[in-house]
Image (cartoon, rainbow, N blue to C red; front, top):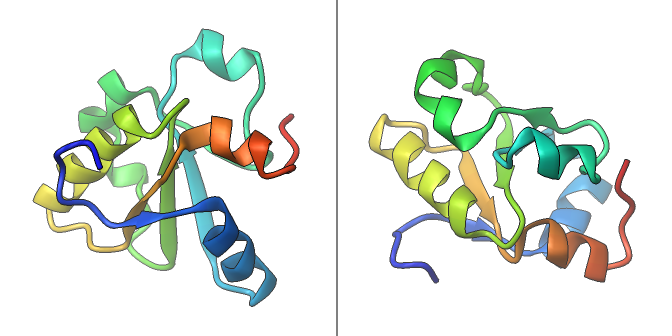
Length: 107
């Protein structure tokens, strides 16, 4: 979608994954100010510019969903992580905006 060859998941597919009991870890790559305005409950916060120094915090097991506001920065994060061999990372298509539009809550 943004010129990156990354795996994506949309909100509907993510809801199904969670309902089926798939182990999902959410990581928010937005700025602290954006996170303060609302985030997906339970998501870890690793700002995009700090991701290279926090790669060890990305789980090797389970499904890792990376999100931002619209999906652009998280696509960059996924491309970076995939370049390091992380195959279990997915971009949340549409970001937190799509999450909210899908009727899901933020904290």
